[in-house]
Length: 154
Image 1 (cartoon, one colour):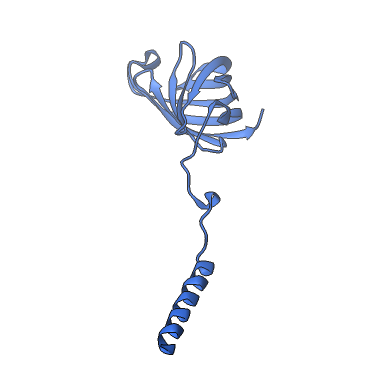
Image 2: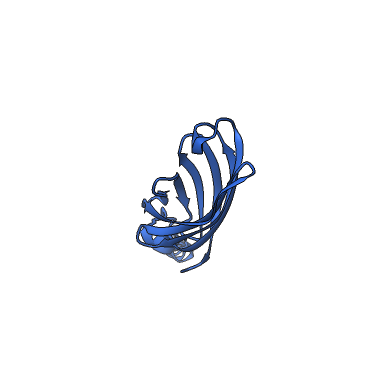
């Protein structure tokens, strides 16, 4: 009988100590899917992109290199402005051109921004909003992609 009760006490002791040695889970330790909103994109983002334009993008008739540089100002509410210099081949088509933009942000940190009467881009947004991967989706033949980096919160 002593042997059984000694074994029972030992088993209870091991189980009790085991609970104290197991790391307890917490909400902070659980990986969650990032959530983005319009306000994830807020501030000034620098960009410099180059690619190839194919007909009929921007009226070209043959494949031609293109490049753009400038910055986006996202207001955090789906509106903003772009300031851009755009070069096609050896010709500068826009220089420090300022245009309004509109944008959407999905909870999964994807989105889109559009320049009125201009190109549209799909967005892939860092959950912190510090950077954005962009790829041109219109006009057809506009093959430009890049990473845009936030450089200031306003």
